[in-house]
Image (cartoon, rainbow, N blue to C red; front, side):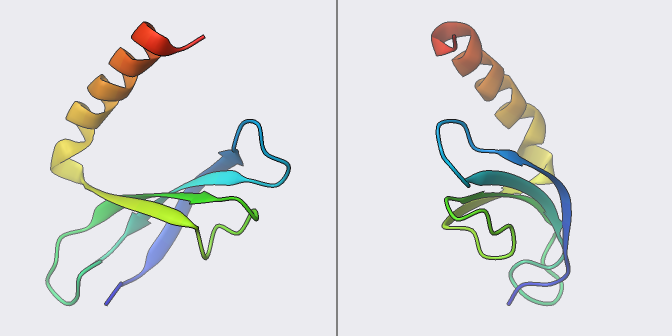
Amino acid sequence: MGGKNTVLKTFPLADTKKGIISVSHLEEPYGTGSFPVVSIGISLKGDDKAPDWKAHIPYENLDQLIEALQEAKDKYGK
């Protein structure tokens, strides 16, 4: 499982020494013929190739995710 992974952006994970957040485009994440997703990875060690946690978001759900993240930021962000 897991197709081609293209890292689009990495940035520091706040309040950590080496942690990063990586955002990637992942082709065929669940095998041949599966639809691409955006992969969001969190690495406490600063390794964008082997994150400690990751979430795969279908492109069809990105607008909903962005809206929910903005709502969280507006309500609880600094």
